[in-house]
Image (cartoon, rainbow over all chains, first blue to last red; front, side, top):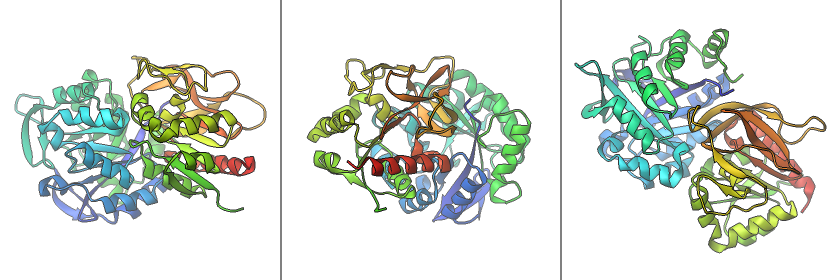
Length: 251
Length: 207
């Protein structure tokens, strides 16, 4: 049986892990390769590295960070940040990424998803969506590390991404990011209902119960950063709690 | 034991860096194959693969890489095919209609059923199909990322299985030829141990 994936996320800026609340007030949280190795040893099922400064700075993700993290890992590595075209993705794969995540550039030019899936396959193409609740009760996709609004309905955008060849949707609740208030379960359920592509839930996790709720809402993987970086909860703690709750996890 | 010469066939679309890192972790000193002579000459050859069969086979046609691979496989020389690599050994694939695979494994690759989320993405349990002496693949959790699969074990191969939208082939092995639908290079300590067993068998095979 396919197990629930626990995915620690490393938001990286200038070669260091940073973490804030709603993408703001970033503080240092350590060395990416050392953290990635620690999380693998704790039982992490894959690692996501997002270069949060890449798109705002108008450049690609730092490849030296990708190389260092790859060398430390024997589990899958997804890398995002500043990917504007298939050649950017190819450089990240050459540096040691297994999957490439696109966000802002795909919102601007959706054909990027088709291009990546066509060249590298859907299993390599992750579409990250930063979704913020709007006044109508729905969600809008935000871009540029959460700093800019787009006119795209986040749920419709997730469906379109799947139709264009995305192999996963990395679905972050902008409202919950870093707050510890739990994942936005309505958002997960709304996206799960419109696409057959696997969903990685992100934004708001503070304890194992939050992760379990996200899986029940339709996520196949749960991403978290703050709870693991703070060292209060290990990946193994979360897995034991999920297993006790009846979920299949990788031992 | 000397460090065996293992070459990785670059298809232009695969996660080659991860494959090289995984083989190094398992004790090999891997390098990229430059041409068909490298494929003919190496102790072991790894065919990684992502993307579509059509794109991968077109890449392998250049320089006779595909022909060199077929020569190795027919002779049973140590070869590891990963993910799409397993699918390329078969006859045809629903992913690329009208394109002929290597045809070394009887069978057709079909898409996973609609009742499950596709791609099949993540860690799933691999179970060897046969009792009897242990093969290279042992029971454990492996990392998969696939939308297509080989449903039935072909005659003449030791098969391992996985369950997602029904039971299908996770790996095939015959002597020193190993084909994995999952990614051993991304399957943690279990995957590294499998790579090490294949490398050891490649050394034993001595050809």
